[in-house]
Length: 391
Image 1: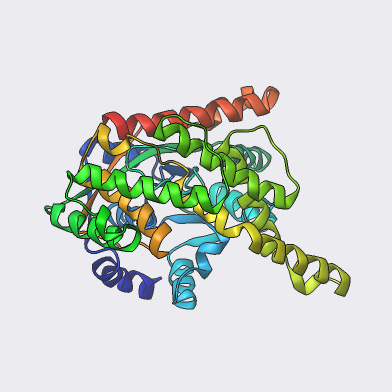
Image 2 (image 1 turned 60 degrees about the horizontal axis):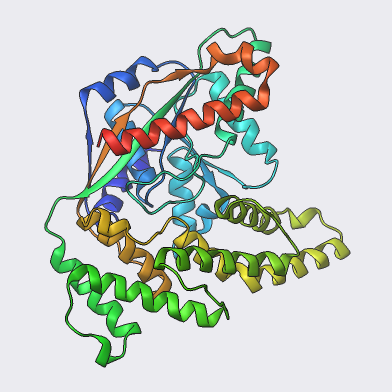
């Protein structure tokens, strides 16, 4: 733990480009009311830097946090082994999404029952990559809390169990317009013929790049988009790409795009992280065939995750440097396969009213599903309000 904490300032300076934290007195006071009790922090997940923000918050509170983290996060990047070491020594533990990951569930319940320290769970599941938008929360965060309450009841522990909504929002501390213009130029050189790189206003440059990406993907996927607004075409192309992936897997669903993308991602994770050591030869053969099938649509899935929350007019509605760079980052990931971390930034945190789930336990006992869904929606709404009104 000491080594990991010592390395974090270097990571902050080099990788995160100097990230600072802003939290007001009211939010600090709300956090302190839950100190010493089983607590889950439920922040939005707008950026890769969110776990680092929560770590900086833990230092501010002089508390060790624990972090439920998607299994693939431990393997990401060129320095996977170092990354995994640091994450584990900073309190992170893995969960394989889309499975009944008993080890992760057991760890979560034990941490809460024992009151080991606040637990951080990003209930959106994926990074939204948008400062002002909260994607729908997954109900698992609330369900795990109630399972922990069941364990506490059996053990005769009468403590409250708090779940706390947190809003994280980023802002740049320096003028970023030259950086934005440079990034737009790099994208234009990559995807636009010289004759089409005519001087236009900054927002029109961004939109022109987006239209070109849409046109290229439409041809690549042999999509026939209905004539309509750019927004309608964006949503129609998302549906077309998703249906292509589902067709490969023999899946059909009438659910919304976000639910279906999550289902496919969970399906992939569940298969990728199966324990092959326990498989017989034939079972391993079938497993390998499934992995080969995933390769046919995994780029589609990554593309959908990158663009899942994007819509036409997002930047026009508020043409801030933050929104420009959020969309540019998406375009860079699509065109170059990666995006640049830019900064320095300040991460503002605002904390909502802690909710004591122990007070809801009797209702939960008789209406489990309804209670879990109601509280999950309340959390999501509270976080969105913090971002929209309080930051």
